[in-house]
View 1 (cartoon, rainbow, N blue to C red):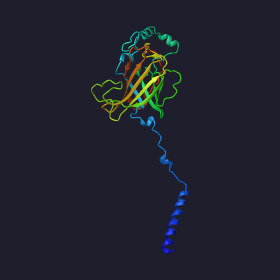
View 2 (view 1 turned 90 degrees about the vertical axis):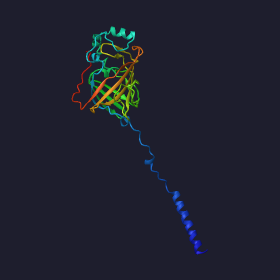
View 3 (view 1 turned 90 degrees about the horizontal axis):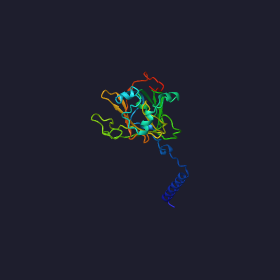
Length: 268
């Protein structure tokens, strides 16, 4: 065999040996690159920041919210005959004797009672809403779990949603002026069920255990740059309401909790 042929044979042998060695080597895969990133939490996905301290600004229904309405004053609530009978026979002293002073501070009516809110993230999937009036706490769950037994605040399921900028959260056209929903902004939708029977107003206007409360929380910045929280609330209760009961309490943000002043429930 010529020297050239010997050289080619040695090259082929070396190449085959290298290939066999490569085939026997372990295959190393970078699992870090193949592992997907964990999904973002509702806290990380929040399009608006509703945390902090907020104070009620009573711009609607002043005489029902700032002064306890008299028994028989049910204006603006579309009640059924059954609700009218229950409200007309309401006895505040019976509630006092039974220790039922908080029946107007439940999830269907709490935000309409003037006071201060303190909103924080309890964890990455749950917003915590504390109210100094009545010393109440609501938990807004972005991950639905076991609602447990009915309670004063019920079980609230939350989600981030987008709203058309020209419509209110409840679907009605907005009045002329700056839109509540700016580009890229969102709305916090909350649906509360599993409520104990309670009151829609402190003068005994009832809601049943089957009431469903739908809320849309919007952040609105005034021309002076100060944030406002506007909550559109709809209460549906076929037992005690002939149509949905709509309210929209407003809250102005405060710089800190220096004015936070928890007080117990009252009948006044």
